[in-house]
Length: 336
Image (spheres, rainbow, N blue to C red):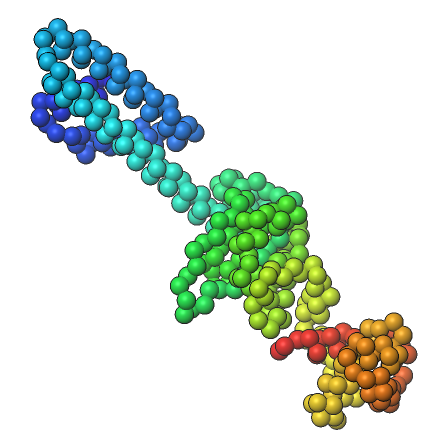
């Protein structure tokens, strides 16, 4: 208060506004309020109270000295201009400190996300989470996003709930969503995922976060184009099983689908679709297969006869039927 009064006296004497060094003092006061976890309310209230007390004393002295109304008005304007300048400097310091803290927190959370997805040791994750002020959840789900098109302006970063970790500048943008059953229903999260080619990985224990992201990317690779709405891997677990070991699935296909090798591509695909429909319907009858494929029952009957000729005994073996369905699902559904 004494410093502020001395500065005010300088202002009245014509020394002008606060200098750089003095403004730094009031910015530091604003920063200090944030450091102590307080808002600016108490500091601003103290400034206002100090201005009122000072004005009352100035006014009493001015009246005793016989000053008229015009000098009093000028004095009042100077008092409140001085307080406004002090208060503005403190607000500036507070805002700068908050921006610095947000930047540091953002960097810490970026490092935490890297640690979680990079397979860091549990102790390293714990320390990174403490630095990022992030409570370790039991389960998480990762979300794979498409990168923004190179020929379009980069979209504005979406608003996300504070616990959601994001790296949208990565060549393969990703999110990590804690407590997925709660946050994946959040309106902000759902809006952020819409129209971004989002695939949501299965919820997993925190230590397996990288697996959730890997599975999400596998499913995204299988999709023919960007999905307009988020795709949930939990609806495609069978696909993930096929994608988990592609070389093995190809080996199964080479073995089990060898009878189709001598046919044209068109014939091969038609019979493959017919065989898959036979395996996936209750009885594999011509009417069931026809309904599933949208063809005439007589056409289905002819194709089923040809399938029987080609695959014969394999259709009676449970293991062979399972391997056939694995091979067919991979061959018919994988765009690659």
